[in-house]
Length: 200
Image (tube, rainbow, N blue to C red; front, side, top):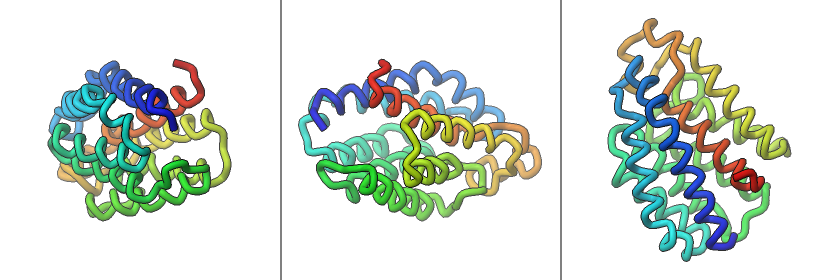
């Protein structure tokens, strides 16, 4: 991947999170701390500020650097989780990945996020988006279909009862609200998918 391409992906991710920061905060106010949007925006703006330096690295090292920066700047519970996602992808991916390698790396990254969050799919977390994204990728779906799967998966967290994170303290009252982490994950998947397709 050319440095300019990676910079484009960073810009797409940061733009999307910034554009949806208030929405993410509102979702988090309903069943969480209420700081998810601002935290994610801060983290991705920090990544954007170092986009040139990150993009100059080989893809695996660039992803690890993004993950490290997110851990340091996002804060809250989301920083370690999103940071782990990117760091694990960087650890598992070859410098020039194909779809098979990307699917395998995402599978391992999901395991790493699950271990870090002590959670699993079905508990109303970002894993409920990551798992369907992995399945769509492994099944050979198009980039657009993968983004659609992410959006659908985020919507599917609405009727779930939260079993992990601060939302789990609400018990039944967490039902009826979309998980903010699932929503931000879906937003990132679509942003990256559209940037890859050249729609930006």
